[in-house]
Image 1 (cartoon, rainbow, N blue to C red):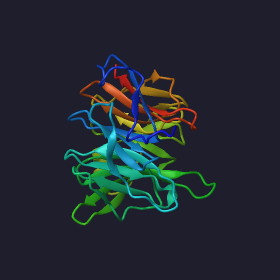
Image 2: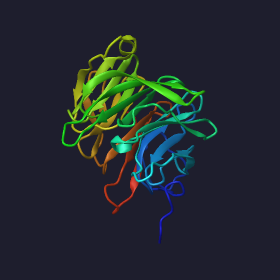
Image 3: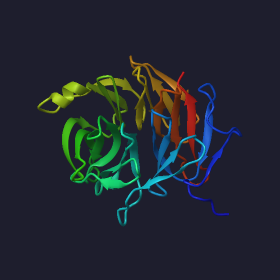
Image 4: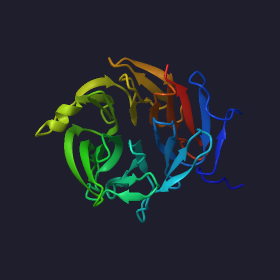
Length: 296
């Protein structure tokens, strides 16, 4: 029997209705190809990007998901939505990876209308995203030519909502494949997947600097991916092939769970003291999952 799309099917591995407290891990089976995840801190709404439907899905209870917005296609290219982030005014921002040809940043307003922030560099393969304000974002990206090593960085993207255009200014370069980015306090953290590390730099100094800034190594980690930070500076990202790790403010790592198929997006719900992570299935033999884990 044909399975319905992710927006229509979310089956729980537990029989309970609604998400449990922070002491009870939960696994939610997702039909589709989820990648990024975000949590709106005001009410705990979960947003997931799905590459099968090229859409943003939303759930207020962690049980029933529906389509919040469908992102415009690029003819002839695979769907690949990267990180998703929430804005203070109820808006969402999401990136299209673009495969070196058509990367983009989209804004979804509180009513679900989708607009493209034009004038960003389409050749940059975009992955990480942080919202600084309703008109300023941080975007991680990399470029790759043939067999040459990937080279990437993080840029400040300033939006003009009245014209749906953006300007982009590089802050940090010299990285291999920066994937995840997160901000805790005044520190910008970046996962550099090529070099198996997390790097960091002072955010205010980077924004005010007249030229590019450098990033210092914060921690070594094998194959990190998208990144999330809790208010106290604790970081969460993929570590190795099948694990999700927690990094303290001093860079000490602890495995949160090591039974993932492939960890992707991760988000912190500080109010409910939970970590929400995408476990993307490799191949079609089994479905992808959304994992809910306690912060402590």
